[in-house]
Amino acid sequence: MRIVEEGDKNEAKSEPRPASTSDQDPSPDSSPIRFSLPVQILPAPKVDDTMLSLTVAGKVQSDAQKPLNPTQHVVSFNPTYEQLWAPIVGPAHPYAKDGLAQGLRNHKLGFVENAAIEPFVFDEQYNTFYKFGYAADPTENNYVGDVEALKQNDGVSVYNIPQHEQKKRKLEKKKEIVRGRVRKKWAQGELTEEQKKYAEEHAKKKGEKEGGEKEKGEAHADKSTFHGKEEKDYQGRSWIEPPKDAKASNDHCYIPKRLVHTWSGHTKGVSAIRFFPKFGHLILSAGMDTKVKIWDVFNSGKCMRTYMGHSKAVRDIWFCNDGTKFLTAGYDKNIKYWDTETGQVISTFSTGKIPYVVRLNPDEDKQNVLLAGMSDKKIVQWDMNTGQITQEYDQHLGAVNTITFVDNNRRFVTSSDDKSLRVWEFGIPVVIKYISEPHMHSMPSISLHPNTNWLACQSLDNQILIYSTRERFQLNKKKRFAGHIAAGYACQVNFSPDGRFVMSGDGEGRCWFWDWKSCKSKVATCGWDGLIKYWD
View 1 (tube, rainbow, N blue to C red):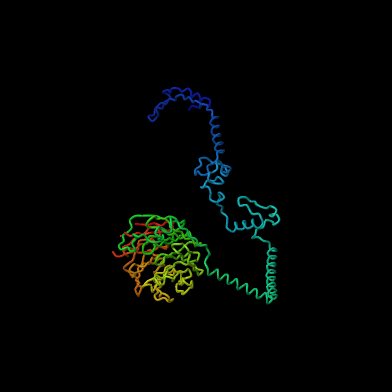
View 2: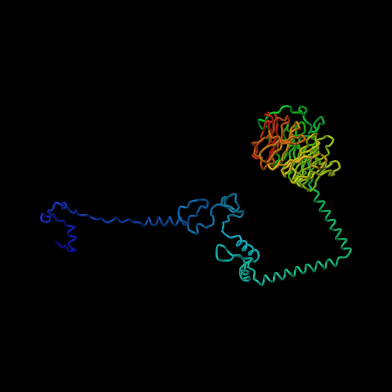
């Protein structure tokens, strides 16, 4: 065995000697001869990292100074607290007063952060600030506002009133109640006969004034403007007279194929339109902008006259038989009777309630009889010659929506928000037929078929139901018109003049047509977009 000293190890590594045969192991399992080669270890080159350090430091410093874009969603470096909460810099927004873009604005005064504060805590600090002038700052453990008041009140809030203060307040309240009773007794004992008489007269006058205001609708100046070229032509004929080539009857109708004209003059929605009786050369429209307008249909297609007499939206309109006069019902609780040609208000009627529907008796000898369905569940009948209420039909349980005359105008059918139909004898306030089923819905629009034998009722369950006008007023289960979406909308239903087609609007702004039995009729439609459209 050879013992090699520590100093000899380096020599053994650096100067290898060939192994002699005597050193070799003669056994067959011995390893082959190995020669150890000299290994030279070179040191790593020196790299100057000064520039790299300066570059990294400069980038970090520039990132720290660079302002953040508040609209970006991704940040490529770690910003500091000061950067995140720094005020917005840069050019002001051209259309915003404080320079904030619309996307950053969630309040009319700028940007408001969401904070998780309990409603009670917020109310406490809010009321404390307006009562004492100071409040706790939720972001820091500190107070804001009047510091002197804070010291005087020892930092109490409105909900932390000291016990002695509460007792003091209770005593003051009791004293006030006692004083009020004493004053009342003293005042009652001191009234003389003359004072009592004056007090009674004053109360009476006040009651009469309140009663008069209650009965009358809102007052509004009546005005009308003519927009045509001239009110009379060279032959002296009025502008409301039909053209000579206009036909009074429409024997055969067709489904409209194209839009012919659109009238746009109302600034708000149009709640109702009515063609001029028999000829249809003019069309009357009731707007939610408080105005009623009449439009030319055959010639110019322009607005001929505007009637301004309501202070609120106009709900319903109705022509008399010859078209020379018409009725308007507004949300200002007034019903007005107008002269179509001159624009003058002939008379005004009101019960102090909102009229939802107005109708004249279609008989020629009863054109002075006005029926109005009111918001207080009544149908009120006026004699327009005298201005007096001659009858009240009071059986409905909800606001009255429609009035339709049937059976040669001897009876009329009404519908209401109470989801029922009631049939009345004209002039007799007793229901002769009451139609109400559990499956029935409210019917905001009813139209009479030209042959007067059927009623089409717009039901709010997206279907049009047909009732007979004969003695029984039965539902015709074989005729039912559906497919449109009218639930929640008071869409009107009507017939073509020859009775071959049923038409209705829907909640999506479309007009639907159905064949009555198994198409060139002109139709006008109105909607809450303020437009009146004429179809051919």
